[in-house]
Image (cartoon, rainbow, N blue to C red; front, top):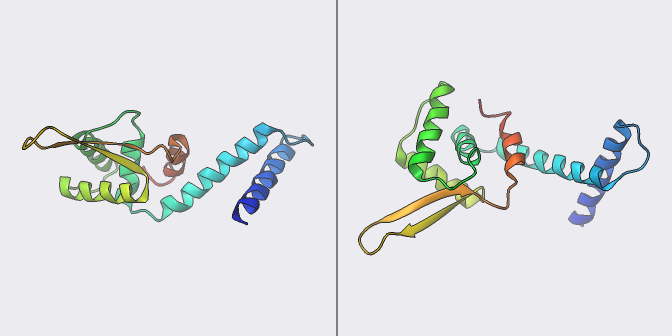
Length: 144
């Protein structure tokens, strides 16, 4: 039943978009725009529930296209915190935040062993299941 309700909501939003433009026929592009608006709206509702630190962390991870090391994420995160006049955090706190966002499905963490006894390299990057632009649009209301 949820899928049917979602489809009806999309068509209703698409019809509203069409009407705003003075047209009487809904086209595929209207439905795609309605789908994007629905996705951003859903992400906004989800982002509201995140802590300020989690929001800034998402901004720092999603602002880059490539995989980042924890050190790179840490620098970017604390740079945003410093510029917005907020308190910076430790590596340990940032690691906990990354683990939470990985659990929520916002980021992925790739772990690569360097061989026996030589440690592990970590890389953090946005998950494929969340559209980058939609999340950044949802975050812009919350991250300064």
